[in-house]
Amino acid sequence: MNIASNSRIRSWSALESLGFVSRDGGRAFQFDGVIVKPTRQWCVLQTDASPSSGPANDSLGQPGLWRRGTDDDAVREFHLPLAILGPGRLDEDGIDALRACVDWALCTGRGVLPNGWTCPPREAIESCIPDGGLTIQSGPIVRQGELVTASDRLALRFPIVPAVAAALPEARRKWLDRLIAAALQHWRMVRVDWGGTPERPSIEAEVDLSGAPHEVLDRLTPIAVDALRWVVEWLLLPANIVADVRVESDLFNVFSERDIPRKGA
Amino acid sequence: MSSQGATAVLPDAEPESFTLEAVDVTGTHWVTAEDIQPSLPAEAVARALAARMALPQNVPWALRDDSTSAFLDDRTPIGDQLEPGAQVTVVPKTHLG
Image 1: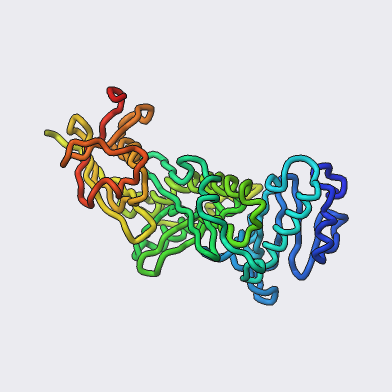
Image 2: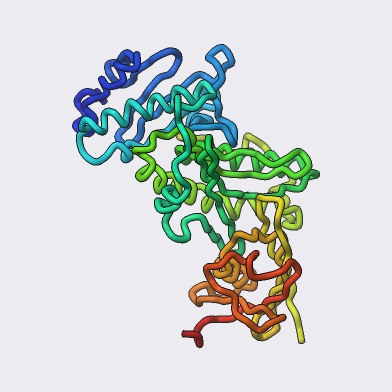
């Protein structure tokens, strides 16, 4: 798809003001090791995860939306929903917002916040979260997410498996790794990873909005809540069943990559 | 009173967590819920406990504190209403206003 002819977004040339150059016949843009790949609903920034490309902060607790790629573990991606730029063709405000969001991605890709960014008032963010939006129940399991705010931090987090037994059998741990990988392949925007401590590991989901332009937060926050809810609801039961050693199954005693269905297979 | 025990794991991600004992109104099913997140609304905990007891999910459920016989407020975090180790009864709301 030639992005230039996309009636939804005609102004990807806004990226040129940030130093991006068009490539792949206009299907992507590149600047300093970061590739921007617009799709119909997302603006995906991608960077090589190798150290020579510079650090890309994709771990839990790090600012921004960087995380493992959906199709490739070797890359890091930043998934920006285009809905936050407003409906229809980009106007001047939309173009400015796009520039600010890309700057947010570039800064957090280097492990820093955009210059001068501070977290908006907590009440402003809370007003963007639907009532009950941070409570998820899946059958017998219920989880409460949290809104994390500090002067330099804004994030939404959910515990999926809050306390994994430190002595969890290796096969079960590999199944949990596989569930995490499947979630990252299936869903955009949300980080899912091991957290906690070595003595009390956990599995958590997070969308980190630290550094996000204030002008897009009223649209971005509800999208982030929805994205988290989908991932957490998807993972809650299977992850907790695998992590619960009281649930016995021959399936959990053996792990083989050979038995994992591949994408496109 | 016959009892059918089951342990529901309702853990949290933060250091503060507690356990409570729950029973249905008939006394048939009881559950030990471990590591409850104090920030969870009581209504959500009630639904999860009901699910663990295989009680119907198309019925609204409430929690009654057995020590006071008072119903918990649905929207208030359960940690604000119960002490660790509390015993509650899972009650259908069909008769409540």
